[in-house]
Image (cartoon, rainbow, N blue to C red):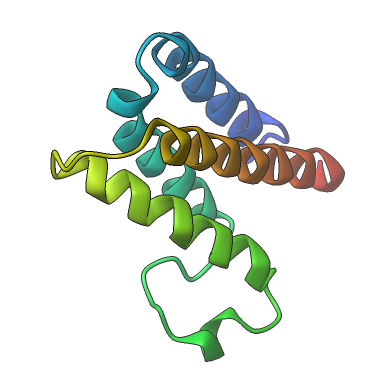
Length: 110
């Protein structure tokens, strides 16, 4: 049986678990954050697995563009490539904005 707010509570718990790592070592936490936000988007029905712009139509395409930009930074960090701290900060900011958008959307639909 579905209970409103459980998904939101689940995502909030996972985000809270990542917060200390984001403060202490954001570059190392970036792949986990990427995974979390990617799963949130997929669960919300966003076509995160396809780069086809046609799939993006009608479902907040700017969210997907932002996610893909942050995802590329996270992928570089995950591969062990040097990533500028400013890029890491930008990716964290993007992920935080997407997270807040998705959480506020979940509140609106509860």
